[in-house]
Image (cartoon, rainbow, N blue to C red; front, side, top):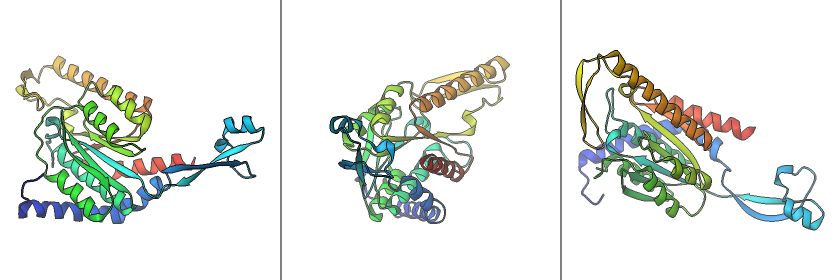
Amino acid sequence: MGAAVSPEMLRQVRLLELRTRGLVNTVFSGEYHSVFKGQGMEFAEVREYQAGDEVRSIDWNVTARMRHPYVKRYIEERELTVMLAADLSGSQRFGTVSRFKSELTTELAAVLAMSAIRNNDRVGTLMFTERVEHVVPPRKGRRHAMRVIRDLLLLEPRGTGTDIGGAIDYLMKMLPNRAIVFLLSDFVDPNAERPLKLLAQRHDVVAVTVEDPRELALPDIGLARFANPETGATIEVNTSDPRVRAGYDEALRAERAARTHLLRRLAIDEIAVRTDRSYIEPLLRFFRRRSTRRRR
């Protein structure tokens, strides 16, 4: 990101910042705050149980040793760390409606960055393909959020493949303490299960799955040549053949079901967004689902 930034690039950054800041101020700020306020807790001490203390806060080891109930006391951390891990691989540079998947990823990441800063949290970003392309360490403040947004918008990745495991390995070394990690990707990576499991054991992970409607159904356009955006390999397909279309639909359903099952098994929340629809409602549903779960 050391290249000079042109006036046109600065204009794009400013427009994105204005658009996302407006959404944060009017829609998302209160939702974000209600979900993540007080989530970061730090152990302070063990003290004797008092009437009204929650049973789940009892330290059973100390209680058994002292023969009297003791509870763990925590203090609320002043700020959280939010990390935005953005997939910028070749499959993200695809879109058939109003924008590419990568553009949707960037705007949604900008909304999350502005929401975090508004809540006085630290925010950073890691952009990856089959390699780690660029990292902005988490910090606080509006100027820092603007840097995150600028880099997300203007980075030209050198890679085209996807290595979620490599990105997660970098994050695990980079984040010594528990953080909220938003992983924004189309998850075109068959080797993501074990890295995701390790990440979810240490951090609060939210998967933001990005799709385009043309990926969800094979168009009936006769003989067509398709190119893999990550490898460059091409294949000719007769899209009018009912068997081909049925096979595509079956493979797609199996792939999406496997992803949903994996995320649920690892207790990773999913925000599913599409290039032909607004991301506002899926993001609001996520915040409200989290808020309801916390109250319970």
